[in-house]
Length: 205
Image 1 (cartoon, rainbow, N blue to C red):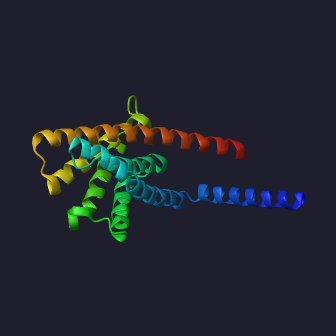
Image 2 (image 1 turned 120 degrees about the vertical axis):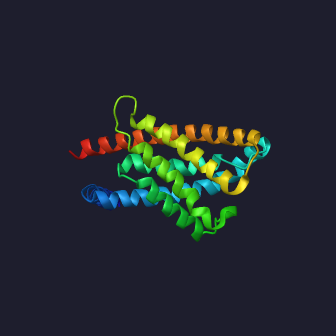
Image 3 (image 1 turned 90 degrees about the horizontal axis):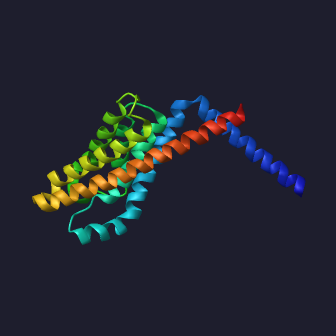
């Protein structure tokens, strides 16, 4: 029985190694898989966090801005991990299609896809900045988190909310803070993913 269990463990480990090597050789396929996974994770996390985020925003008398930042965090992570240009814009389009498919249209109606695509463009513009000096991956993730969250909030206010100046200020401040937190988390997550990848590569070598 022990020998059989050991053989099964070895078989699973070999399969895992083959899959890992396959993804490493086929970087485009690996990147597409990462983008799809992050898209679904972002939409799912947004739905999960919404009830708790609404408690905070209701207390501040503003429409939202927290759960969106957590959703956009995955666009930043995928962009940094894959290093592909306009990755976040493509992912924003994918998230919009996913949201439409599960009925998350909201009050924006036909303009809803732009609520996902515009923040993706904001992320991509930050990622185009060369990684020199201050602009490390972590700092770019931090800035991308803020800009994407604020751009989403501004678009939502322009299309739907039309808030007066005081609640708009609170709304944008909340979007900025949540975007900064999620951007920081995205940068830390990317560092961890890259370190795990380096460790895996050194073990295989």
